[in-house]
Amino acid sequence: MHTPPWFTLPTSEKQVPTTAIVIGAGLAGSSTARRLAQQGWKVTVLERGGEAAAGASGNRCALLRPHASRDSSVTQQFFTDAFNQALNLLKSLGNESSHSSLYRQTGALQLTRNSNSYHESAQVRPLAQNDASKLCGVDLPSGGLFFPSACTVDIAAVCKTLLEHPGISTNYSFEVTKLSLLDQEWLVSNNKQTLSAPLVVLANGASLSNFPSTQELSITPARGQTTEIEVGNRLSPAIPLCGHHYLIPQRNSHLQPSKSSPTKCRQQHWQIGASFDRNNDKATILETDDDENILGIYQLLGDQLAERPSPDNINTINHWVGVRATTPDRLPVTGALPDCQFFSQEYADLHHGRAVSNYAPAQYLPGFFVNGGFGSRGLCVAAICAELLVAQITANTKLDKKCASYLQLLHPARFHIRRLKRG
View 1 (cartoon, rainbow, N blue to C red):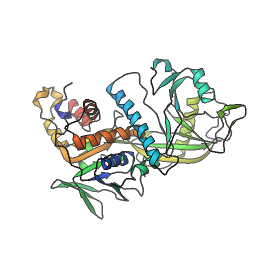
View 2: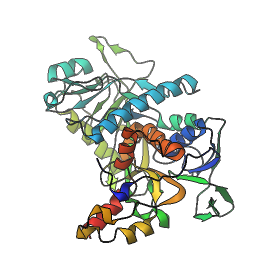
View 3: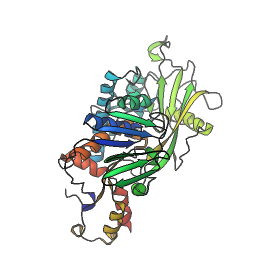
View 4: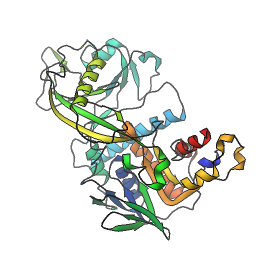
């Protein structure tokens, strides 16, 4: 398939590892920094918060599961590969981490009334209602898709572990206020100091489009809140459940299975989530979001689960809130940063339908890359996006066909081009 000129990738020679600055210490930034360091780069990570995962990657109890789809498109292939890489990364980090609860491979069930329309694979197993209920140890309102390799993950611990590499240094409470290019070096400044490097990767979440050169990336903030509730000795699902909301039973060491059935675990706490408030960048806890999460879970479970608590009588014991970086097509933006001025001028008349051959190849800002727009799928896509990005940085003239197709799928200029085509 021919690549249109606006999606041609940079053709610079293979770079010899030197120094790099990564802006952001969440999943995108820490994954990118680790991958660069593994390739021999000396990486400085700048984070405006006081520690790693200070923003949307601070969730201490998240769910990693595959992306279920009925098709075999490039997008679905991307998510399939992304999940496998995420799982492999967790296993690798688990061997080196001092955090004993980095992740737990629990499996998970996505409730759906049309599970029989999905094909079985190594990642996804469709289950009828009776089989799903038996697996979870409770009566469920429908069948679902069982993900045997799904995990619960402490994302903040993952980020901190990724940054524990001799090639990575961190600089916290460093809010970047200015980026400028001088003699092939990027100058990265806050209000007190300026650092420089020939390579900069912007991976700062919902702030990704806050600079003049990144305003065409179409990043929209979306506030999300999770809620931890105490459910006493109510009968709980044995594994995490998900749909429009998700429920993760918190397994404490002193909790024992129900006497009436050793397969039916009684849990003390549920982690539930998550609200989704687009165009809201305020990371403040809201009681209304706790209520929304609670009601969402019981809408998911239907009337099958006995002894249901309600927002009026439930004990909420904790909450967490973060602001996600989302994109219009729910795919990341990963790759070299386009020269938006060149794009606006060279491709200004795309809406007239001129022949593709009339246009010059894309131009990019030298040594400037972006990685973000993960939305609620950051845990799944962070590892593969870091690998794709570093492959483009270090050997972008020798990308294999699949890697090149994924980079085109995630191309940072795709939304700018769509606007130009509309006129």
